[in-house]
Image (cartoon, rainbow, N blue to C red; front, side, top):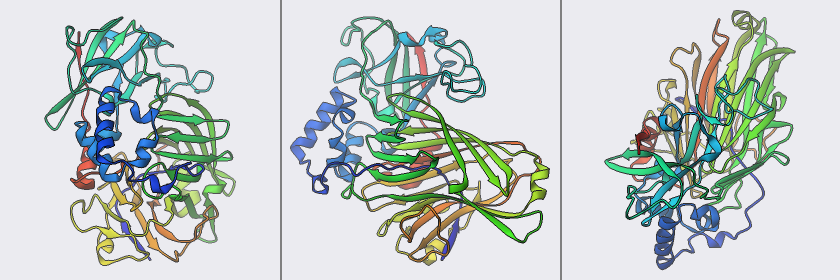
Length: 482
């Protein structure tokens, strides 16, 4: 049984071996210890990276309260801050190795984790010896489209005061102010300081295809980077639960004529890892993907899969060879892309169509509320899932308004789904969600879109609609020379 919703997001999720901690530890932080964590976190922003067991032991409500006690909300708790070189005029052409980031925390100016990513001339994150085009600008210099990245939650509520919070070495070059809902937080771009916070929120081992984040972990198939193995969350009451069954991609089409039809699944896709740009804030996987139908190359896809400790960002650039010729070859194609979750029974969901109304239930069947959530891409572009496992999932897809396709959100909540996928290990669709494309563009060779997936402990009391609005309108960095 299926219900069609609106828009979508996602193409990647995660997994690894079960975390080595007992489910009984969830909820073991009592009030006295919680208050100490709040105090310690204010003094040491990267505390939870150094002590990952904290996020495993805190309840969902406590993590939500921790964000509030830190002066943040559910979105700014998980989101990064990105400062582009063009915004930081006083750092133009400065040596990247000499730049660092600090914030005032608990009355002291302290370093916070950060990274600087250079971009190539095609706009992708640059990795020396791997990227297909040259670095945009000068390698090793902060210029062109280069980015400084740090976590919003690591910024400080207080401004720098040379008397109260002096800088021991180096020079404060620019102040970064972030205003959200009337409150402003600050970070500082510094040169000439050797002081660094060496904590890492994420790590990726390309030799084993394993990702570890403070909130989730996974392993990818070495033969296909779009096949995720054993994704688990490092939080919630059931950390041993495998959250994701499989990522699915199913292309059914006639070739020249509508019959016979051929079918291609994700196991037939070539998704190779070109390289990795490592960093403590995000791991950027450079991917090259090829889709072939009946021996005919259909899509060439280039992407940087960006992995955060509570999220995935997947900008996708599709090259469709032949444009109009391709549409004559593929006859009435139907493309389903999405996630097959593993037993989210007891959870609930909503979409951009009905962000504050009744929620649908994940119970193995489609009810009347779910049947009414029928909207088309890109009119609305997100779906929210409360897993009942101690965390939420909010997925969003951003599609250019001039992309001439017919697409709709795909959703299936069924104990016995109509379709099976070769890569799935659990037969139920509880639920499946994704995007269904029923008409390809004509005459457009390159299409850019982006898929975003966040895993907050909760989207907060304001609900998924408010979280999604913050995604679309995040606090913008305002830079001031010092």
